[in-house]
Image (cartoon, rainbow over all chains, first blue to last red; front, side):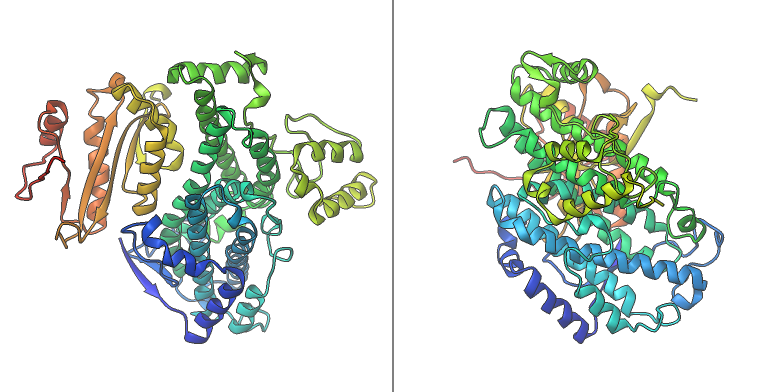
Length: 406
Length: 149
């Protein structure tokens, strides 16, 4: 595969550099220690990367078989409008995640975990840069409502945690546990979106996906491997490591991750426009199965750590038994393991928005009872957050019939 | 419809394959070493995602082949695919899984512009040496040397 590296016009490149000096203060530290943590890897490049040699023909949708579009004005107005919104939302997520990571990256358990997250942040910066390239390299004025390219860049770079496009990027991290859980859960949604968009009928978008996906693979590992190692510490009785810390972080992020796919009933427009190849429900169902596998993988590490003399088969059967009986095994309780919350738990968007459902699918009818339940299943820092206050206010209005869930 | 339990799939390695690879390695070597495999899988995931392959039967990983594309090492400027480690669950040997994984990793290397695939082998390990010979590896002019300390 061949990749073309593209640098933005100097004033835009400088704007991104200016942004990262404010929001990513450890950037230079990362570059200075690159050889130590990533020996022989290619040096980091703050540039857009476009895969060469990708298909020229539209893969799916109403224009299937036609040549891929290379300019926005070759798309229908509806298509261009919809795609512009996707690109701006994607740009917002990339810059937003850096702002989130930056708050707690220095609390990493060790220097290697910190270096991994710093690299994730740098690559998210590059992905944001990639989206700016898509906005600036072509003329979108016919669907931008009069907003110019430079204004779009300014709008994106001025967003902060709290006013990004997607909810998952408006939550502050409460500890380094959020850095790695976010990488394992939310970056995984990113992987799905990028994979679906590899078919995009707009060729510059499609060509942007493979290099981003290759970097995303590292982001997922930078979440999963520290989670596995934390599970091992918890299993060995480290008094500072307990899987409840992980579980509370999962409870915080899983619901937001599901909502990033969009309403479960939607996504057909993306397919008919040729922008993605799965509906929202198809994608979210695959995602749920994948995170279920991830949790099983971490639990395997945990149980083996607790019972070092067990064979791999015995570890598997112990987990099967615990999941089946929800009882205990040699002093290890089902509640000691990680679990995937019910997909209806703590939702605020989609077809199950504001249904009050517990992690095991148990229903609630009273808002305060549900909020008390959430407070016991989320970490203290998050429970005390503005986001939770706003959620509680909205939930009470929905339950009282003052607000309707659309 | 084929039975699900026997469906073979060769696919690129991902970070959720660690436990399966640890398990296969333990069956082969008798040693449980998750840290080693976490480190190696992070390396390949970072360096050349899409190169390393696993073999799944019925959704269960039963073999792996790890490698990446490199250039500039040992004076070899030409991009080469390197295969570092591979293993197959002893219960699933004899099913041509090694060759299938090799075909996939080789296709990846070719797509990335490699002109050759390289590896090192302990010639006293007849099984591994025989497998590599069977899939087309031949002794190269470049020879591995060592100095015992």
